[in-house]
Image (tube, rainbow, N blue to C red; front, side, top):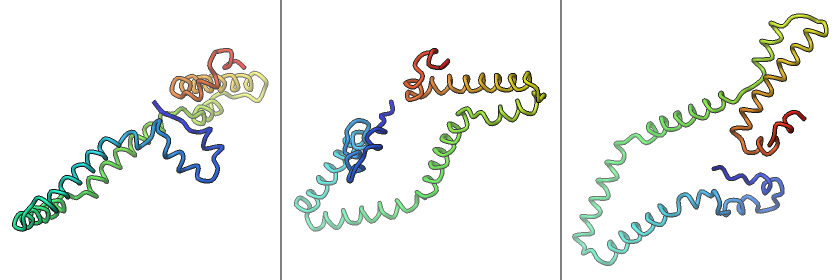
Length: 159
């Protein structure tokens, strides 16, 4: 579920962005705090073990292990993998964007196929475009809570 802060952004004052970041509902911190705490505890444990528990020979062995892991990490092309990930995310976003109905194509088709400069042709073109707009509105109403709040009943659609 998406949490919207539109009303808070519209009335924001100085420091409003940092206040929005610190809100808990739908926050990135709420999503990642467990992993961050686990990472910090593991890092603290390794750091304390290295500084206080290991002997000098064990410290040198640990340093060699760290250098080996660093060299092995360079073998994985992170930018290449990240490029594939970004391309996948962008492709998914573009697919969602393309699935949002737009009346432009329908308008061109109706204007090109429904001929007549008289009242009958004009009313027919207008009616077809109203049906197209209604179909787009019904789809957006099913997807977006903001649109559903604006048009909650069929009486609101008629208005």
